[in-house]
Amino acid sequence: EYIRIHKPSYLNIPVAAISKTPRNSRRKSVSQSAKKSKRQSTVHLKENTDILIDVFNVFEEKIKKTKQEIHHDLFESTYDNIVQYFDYYAFKRAVCTSSSEDIIFNPVCNVIPTIALFTGINTQDYAYLCQNLRIKLEENFTQNIFFINEKNSANIKTLVNSIFSQWESIVDLEEKLVTRNLFTFRYLFDSIKTENDDDVRSESVIFFFKQFELIPKETIECFVSLISCHMESLPIYFIIELASQTNIIQEQLSSSVISKFCIKKLYLMSPDQYVDRFIEKKESELILEISIDQKNYK
Image 1: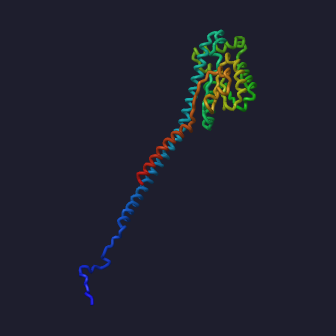
Image 2 (image 1 turned 90 degrees about the vertical axis):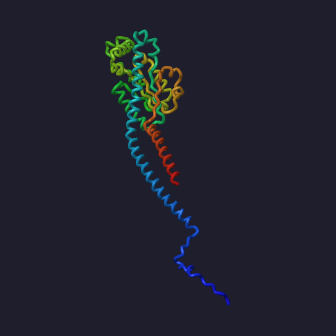
Image 3 (image 1 turned 90 degrees about the horizontal axis):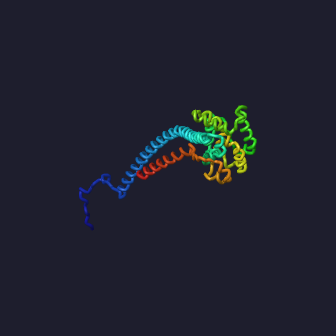
């Protein structure tokens, strides 16, 4: 026989009333709180990202407008640099040729003012630049602009003879009686003294070498040789478009030919390159900002 032990009445609590707390309940609570916080962080990050995207879209619209302005500024800057150099050289030649004797021995009259236009890799922007440059030079400087490229370089002698035949036909019979050197530079000198720049410019001849690297070396040297006999009688200018390294002229031509050039170098960055560098900088800043936000919300 056993002794029966009765449970005290105060321990007779219904099973449903007993609150059982699982061991991992606290962990679940913390986990749910973390998930909720992470969801809020994700929403917050998305909102920030959307704002950044909106800002970038606005920025992109401004870039399009800015790019047009850059096109114009680069073009105007290039044109101004070229014209200033040519005008300066025309004045320098005219002042130094106050007599026919000076013309023969003056070294200024025996060189060709040359613009070396370093464009880097050719793009559509450069085609736009060169096309508009030619139009503006024809309108404001001289209509005697001739493009020389790989295609027409084979007939270079015919081209040169045709150009200078046209120029000589402009001169009056009476003026032909005067020494061509004396007439040309006296005319230039008198024109500059009277500040008649249009007359000085209109008598000039500009040869624009497109894709200089593709033109055969022999053709260029032949061309310069043909031009040399006219340098004392006519203001001649070269614009050389270069897409490669800056020393290509020295590599392409002999020293005797290079000695006939007086070169001014212009280094150009295309509008696309200019804008792309600016965008890359801003994009890197935005990416850095987003990555910092993501780290903070993890």
